[in-house]
Structures are given as C-alpha cells and as structure tokens.
Length: 125
Image 1 (cartoon, rainbow, N blue to C red):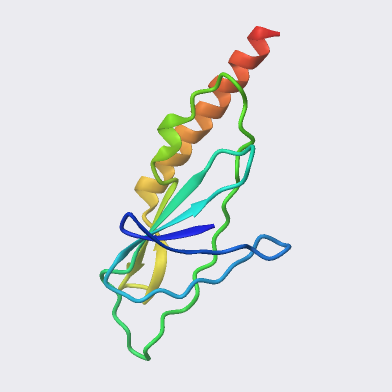
Image 2 (cartoon, rainbow, N blue to C red):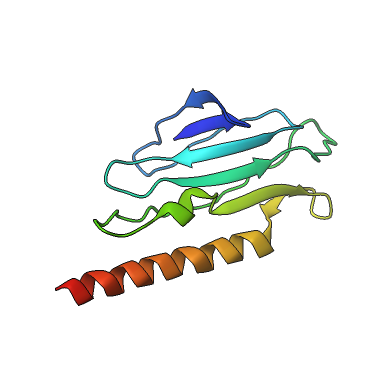
C-alpha cells in the first residue's frame, strides 16, 4: 500500500497477514491510498482531511475494506484508475465517512467493467 500527499509519494506500507494497516495523517490535506498487488487491478481511495474539526486532538479510526480484482487479459480497466472511494470528514458525525454518491457511482462502474470483462472472456471461449 502506498500513501500519497496529493500526487507525492510519502510512504509505503505492508499490510499484516490479515491485510490490515494503520495510517495516521495530519489534517488539512487530500491523501491517496493506493493498493497494489501483482496480478490484480490497482485501487485507490482518497481521504480528505481538509475539514477535520478536532475537539480532543484525535479523530476516531475509520475502518474500511478494499477488495482487489484479479486482472484478466484483454479487459480494459483504465476507468478504474479513478479512486474507488472518497472518504471525508463529516462534522455531523464528528468522524470520517464515505462520500456516498461518489463511492456508489464508482462501484457501479467497477461492477460494469467486471461484468463486461467476464462476458467478453466467456464469449471468447
């Protein structure tokens, strides 16, 4: 996993055996987490910390899952270069949450790419 501040790589991490990791980031920035594994489609998640309001100096952890897709030959995954999810601070809940509209739209696109790729692979058999 790679952590970017805007487009500058600032750190690389290895997940534990269960695929878990922990990253602490200062507020007032946009970060990109990039999940990379050989043979799988790279996924990105944006974390917007620009509007974080700290009462006790720390925001609660935000847990999320990233499922990597096995890369198939002859499937165009280029639309998935865009981040799969946008996570941002929500003052109303005093914590992080998904930008649901953006994340839902990207999941629809991802599902369509996978379905189209699978249909193309089956048709080629």
